Figure (cartoon, rainbow, N blue to C red):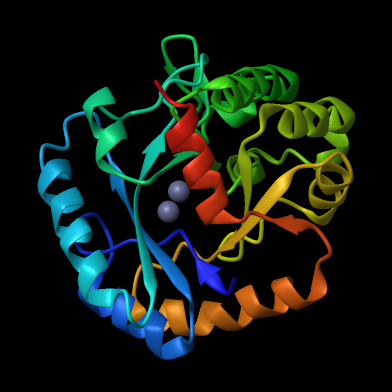
Length: 243
Ligand SMILES: [Zn+2]
Ligand SMILES: [Zn+2]
């Protein structure tokens, strides 16, 4: 299915309304789209947002399938996410992402980079990333490994065999994010060989991004040989297996 399941609207930091993003996605020829705005634990607008997307589903159905989602940031080394648990049942998809690398009592900042050993930052990143992979609330790992770039960490610095084992064993959907061009080819190939399931997403924040990025989404779909998630099957399985 030609789809893009990661984008933002004016509910968070996107420049367009959900209607405008969905309309543009339908115009591009996408068969399915998800609006996945950034949330925080305190985002009291989430119930109204979710209800709005539910109402739009009906209106869009003849042209494009709509899924509702949120993107929540990791807040601790355990892989906890910055979203109130009451949000979970309101949306179809929860994207978990690391925007800042947690450390004991806070986050690593770029200025720490000079002071800290790279191995300490990598150690904390690994712990948070593995925590995220284990977090049962999360469906999709958004832009995996993107946060390491700012700390000068290369794939050769990482235990790639262990990381890809954990990704494959987690059962999470791994996002190939065309905006950040992440994860790198090695992670994709090794994880795919180990059975990981992928999604290609644009993380667009405006209609022009969505249009420009759709070419990259299409290119990856044509070029790569990994397994792309069957999202309806995934959602029906998740619904039937939850209590
Ligand atoms: Zn993000
Ligand atoms: Zn995003």
